[in-house]
Image 1 (cartoon, one colour):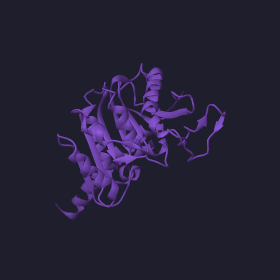
Image 2 (cartoon, rainbow, N blue to C red):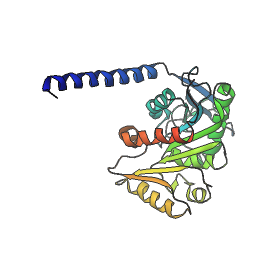
Image 3 (cartoon, rainbow, N blue to C red):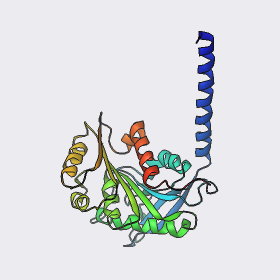
Image 4 (cartoon, rainbow, N blue to C red):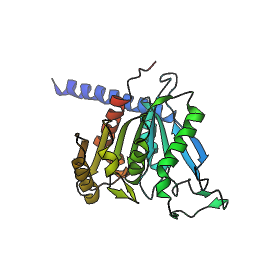
Length: 266
């Protein structure tokens, strides 16, 4: 191929890639989060989340993916990922765990608790909090989504809370924990993983994130079946590992399409 034709071919390829990227970006622009709120079961705090829905003409009954952030963060850290998977035919519910983000309104004192302030037993409430907010999302939007197939993806503390919720929620067909820890804020996940049946479970951590990577290895030792697990180079932790590592991002999307994506676009 002559240089002239090579340059022309590369130009056409660049235009095609730009067109595909622009189309994907345009799809993201059409997706907005709808706020979901409900009082926590112990009526001490208001729980807040955002649900992102795909084009419901193209994906009339999308399955639900619950997204849970790491400690010292909020649901907003999942925004780009939520918009991406919504553009691919999934409903995404990103939740502020109690004590973080907007889930800080004290219903008894009628004012916000200071950010980073926690009370005794707060973390133990997380699995029930998740169940409660998911239930409200289904009440509000269940007529537009598939209420029989869920996934949960949680980073660090959110991952621990997510699998503790998933163990008693058979509609969860896939679980992923980013930067897992054997014990996060008293939430111990080894006993749960040991008895987590045969549902797909994915663990991923950075090699230099010592506690998370060692937790992955130890957790893989407590189960009889083989876990899907990746230890990646570097030191990125929690949501940063998802947002900055395109391979982890792509792996999560591939898994969602594999385990939940059997619906066909209309």
